[in-house]
Length: 161
Length: 201
Image 1: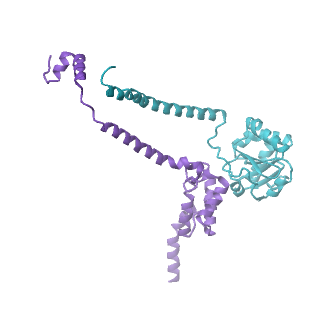
Image 2: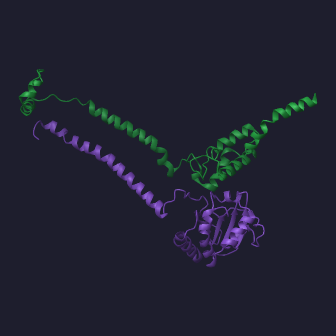
Image 3: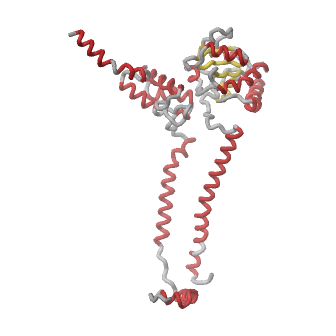
């Protein structure tokens, strides 16, 4: 029975072996791994620049992934790990830029654009709402004079050849 | 245009607004084009570097580290206290034998060495025989050389690729960083004047 059991365990473990070699960087504890991944997704890979270190295959990204996991398994908080990387690589490493005076415009742009758009719509609607005044008698006369008889007659609905 | 007075008052606004609608997008496109042109020009002459990530360590003392030497070379190893032993500005250079731009910048490191500037090397993720061969072939500019095989010291310095060079003042404060090969232009426009002014201070 013991032999059967151990055989079963071995058989079950076999398909896991290559997979675990591929993800040697991953933490065994799924909660810690999820936390590490969450941190890693907020850190820019500085080699490829538009990927997070979780998505990148660059050497440096792998090293940073390892550091993040080391610190997480040591019990460091989200902020502590972020600070560690930020101290070394500066704001650029953060995929979500910090909110401060120098980045105010960056963060405010969507709001400003939205407000600008709403303002433009409001202005346009208000302009359109102004009723077009009736033509005065003098204007009617001038219009008829300019358009000539053919067109002024047309306005009465009698097409001419 | 003659006619009703209040109708006339409303009229002039129209053509000017139409002009605005025509010229505003043109102006925006023009400014964008100008910016793009400036960017391309900067890329061309090297004054704009999209990878020029500013170093977070400028104005700070160098991080602590202690590296072994490169095996088989009789160069002393490198640790952070060594950076303070020169009493003059120094250059710290991260390099590797597998890095092609490192070959490009090597003559400039040799020139610094000849000018008497201490150049301290950190050999990044390299194998000792390769590093030795590189220095035999291209010459050795380094006063001290540490081997950072795991790349941890490089991360502590905020290095994101080799070659990368730092200028430290005599108190060990990082004053300047260059990511990429040191070209003759970088030499004459940045490093040499900086080292001269730091040396006087």
